[in-house]
Image (cartoon, rainbow, N blue to C red):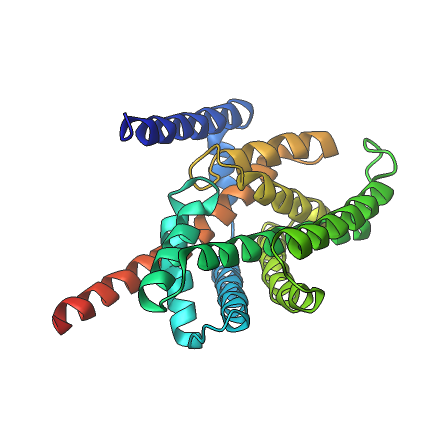
Length: 291
């Protein structure tokens, strides 16, 4: 029974992913999306991929900072390699939890860290990243033209940013025992990460000649990234596209372009776990050669 339950949950998440994608493509034509993607210049993919990989560097720096604060010194090179391999496992798990589990196991084995301490660091880093993602999304909402369909959106965004910040500070301080200085310093790395992600989406929008609604699409993609963290799909696929589809419809912008951007972000983001797979194979080869 213990082996059946995880398999059943995985199958359920696969079903959610496929169902969400089917719903998306029932509203937008796959041929239209293919035509949009085919017209996107190659340089857009290259620049967007570079920005996505910049997010991994920022995440590695944040993890290294948390570990140093806990008394575990980790070389930057090792932190970056661990981040990439962790993303490999996170891409195939709900909410990216597989990446955090891998990092916890790796640090326990190679850095002699306690499981609870390492798991606490993973939770702290993830929570800090979600806070920064919400802040960047709210700031972009304040910068974008307010749609008439959502009254007082700037005030709602400002209230959400303040409430999210207060909530994060309280949880990190009292539940995780993080002093404000540590939260702020880790927040710098997280903000760098999320700004790089937003720039990657913005670059894709510009490559698709969507300068007018670029900020709206970026906000939708950031919100969809938050929703994709819910453990209801595999790697957030399907859920992300479905969120952008209905968000585009609500804002009165083109649905096919919104879904195309979400799919492009997913495709570009797959270069990260691909790099992780290459790094993992090299590590295993070196370990086997050393035996």
